[in-house]
Image (cartoon, rainbow, N blue to C red; front, side, top):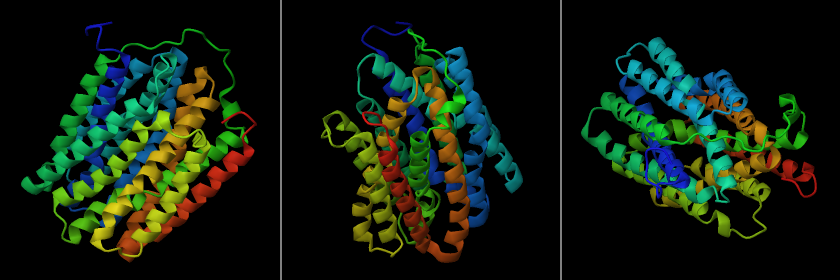
Length: 385
């Protein structure tokens, strides 16, 4: 059992790693744009910088997942990526020029972006072998997202925005430490290796990738500019963090009850629900809703993100051979990256020109993703997906 006592088992180690990894996202996602603004970047440049990870992942993720699959070394690749990411963010701290920030952020992202698909592959494979549900373990990452976000929200009111980067660095250091606790995970019963191109020839798999990537990309304006928009509207850091937290709490509840969902809530149905929830959420956000309505709209994050994520993970797990599990997650991450890169870059221009009415474009993207989810369900073989 390694260096930890017997009671510190596989599920606990995975949960702790998700705590560290998602806590980093909670620190980074809402408040990194504030650091960029403190570095004198305008909204268009912020959108371009935030799109960089989505572009870099096109090369970084397939490289990392291919190594993990071919060498059966998920844990080793995860730890290497965490160390590389930590080094990249440390180099980013003193950067001031926009070009330097873009290049160094891209470098850090080359190591950081493969971690989530690798972590999901590791968790799904190990938990499945132990007959444990994914959602109740993954939810601790969402809890950590909320805690990290709330703590940084308080810090944003107490320290200068240019110092927020140090909180991100500290969070990534904890991710490295958590990755070091993971035990090696190997495939016991090897399946015959199938062509990696085969997955990309299957219409159902492609429909799932398209649907999931569109629905998740519809969060671009929210991820990139909701904090700036709410800050401009007079909300303090704690209030902004609380709004983000409400959405993640809705996601946590869904994850916690994954194993208790009605049989009719199959992965394909969850994916459709994610598209519908996203389209509704962003349509109302585009109408400049009153502040009292914002918490209720944030609850829809449980559908637009939570249901989409669970549905996608379920479909990918059912569809991909175990020997291609990381590769399938890599394909998904690339699709998500391409869609998010385009949406994030577009969101910078839309927000600069139209403010929060930019959410209308996100509603259309989510609706298109919902249509893709319906198509995926129509295409699926009987008894599959």
